[in-house]
Image 1: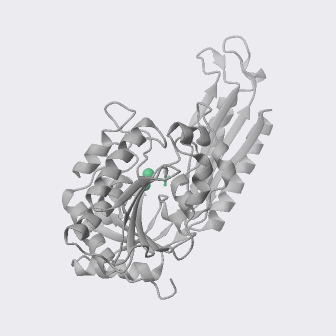
Image 2: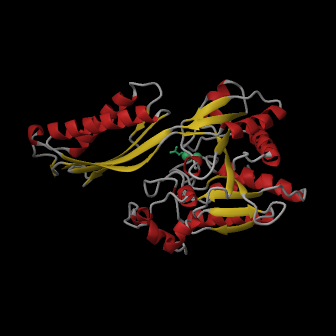
Image 3: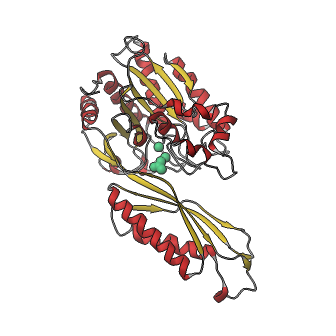
Length: 403
Ligand code: GLV
Ligand code: MN
Ligand code: MN
């Protein structure tokens, strides 16, 4: 809990927490984490995409690893635990092994992923996709709001973008991936349980929409002659909301919108907004995204606007591996906690790591299910229960026979 507090002090937002990928605050948080990893007996370094990576060798050097981790970046005005709790818990577990001078028949790697939230570049899971080898090199040309590319930001961080492709792990090098994370939902609290075992992570689609109308004088242009891009965008947001409400398991959000030129007395001529749609079933999400695109096209046509829709990122839903879930559940039962399985509505680095290894997740109850909000809160007792269960899981971990 203290370490989460310490990490939270590395923020671009005074009095709150905002720490985006490859920022000076991310550098400071990474340095803290690397220090904790070394204190826990690990070899630690920043990799070429800015992940903090620590390795604790097994009984012999060079064995395949159990990978543990979570992310160190945050949303804007974030809570202190989303991501960070998983990183500090994994380090704490290795520290416990190290203090008992215990080596396991596999190595452990702890990764503090640099980008899970995708706040800075709109496209997410950059750190975990690099390790999974699924990052298309062209993505390094993606620009942030200031026009800085990922490649330039990496160079500014002292990293070499040409080395990103060398981070890809081969199948077999990673025996499994396990992540502890706050639940970010209300299920565990409602059932009075400190922890739960994740079954699957919902898939997501992210879009960037541009609407172009005509800027003009707010006092002189009659309403009937306007091509107001922001009024059209408002209609698009409501259309998306209507579509998402048609199915209980579907969610859709416009989280960011920018109107240009952005003056009180000017009709907005151009608007950019983001779309985030998620569902447990990929077909349901794909249908909804298609319906949203049709509606945006219709609204733009009716209002005589030009529109463009860019797909930023799409990831299918990711199931957790039953063999790993069973091992996690044994650890949960050993602590006399009823096993509760639950899906994750939020995205996680495991979605990317799944390309090279089976994944599992342990959720820790959070207050009111609140996250992506400074009010995010957990109890020390639940964090400790999560850590103990996670530690037992690690110590007893048996690789799958096929791994
Ligand atoms: C990350 O928290 C996400 O689900 O967007
Ligand atoms: Mn998050
Ligand atoms: Mn997270």
